[in-house]
Length: 317
Image 1 (cartoon, rainbow, N blue to C red):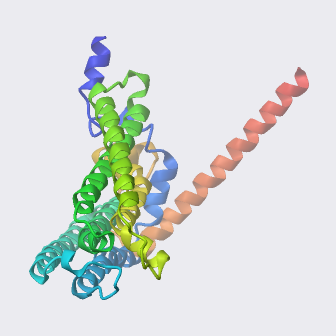
Image 2 (cartoon, rainbow, N blue to C red):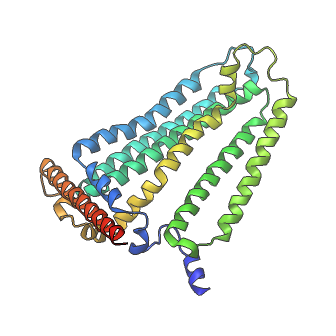
Image 3 (cartoon, rainbow, N blue to C red):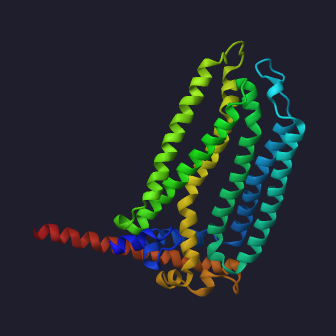
């Protein structure tokens, strides 16, 4: 019991080197090194910037657009000052993110094996900022389409609850991998059940309000209206997918950073291959390519030997 309590006190960031190896395998380390060249890092940096600027562009566009369709209740649209407030908030965060990304790129030059970890963090944060602001901006447009401001707090609650539920689920899954059956967190279980209850009831309440109101009277473009109605959820769904895709990758990168020397020595890489701060980048990537090729040949040879041994054992039987 003491052992269980002790593990319950740990967080996802407290795993030891041996525990982290349940996530950080050799294939992840090889992939991280393959995408750690200067050229790839520059290209990925522009991907990070696009992730944040695409959201900003759409926020500016939606903030200035006006709904003239008879389907919308123009009185329920936010005022220009409210839209401008959210646009200014988005621009401030966008500028801060770009500055942060630039500083991190400069700082990480001497730890090139972490470039994949750095990219995974930035693309998730950048896209998250974009999707959150797009969801916020579309709240009033959705409320105008649905002819009721009650949907604004409903969508906010639903987005927050679903986000928490996804994060809790991802966290819980990784904790189970790291600490196996010894991991049991009753607080997370309760939080997950609460998120389930809230999300189900919010959806039911929204559906009831949707049916009660005469929403489809005089609609000419049902597809466009449906996209408008669910816009706050659709934008957040993009981030939820990205979070699901990158969560484990980010965690693996964190452990690779935390136990960098242990992993370098475990998989037999030189300091020049691993850090690459005192060697020409072209020569470094060529060395890594040769190293990975040798490892692949060793794996194939080992696999062939294992198959031969297994075949002989079956013949003897």
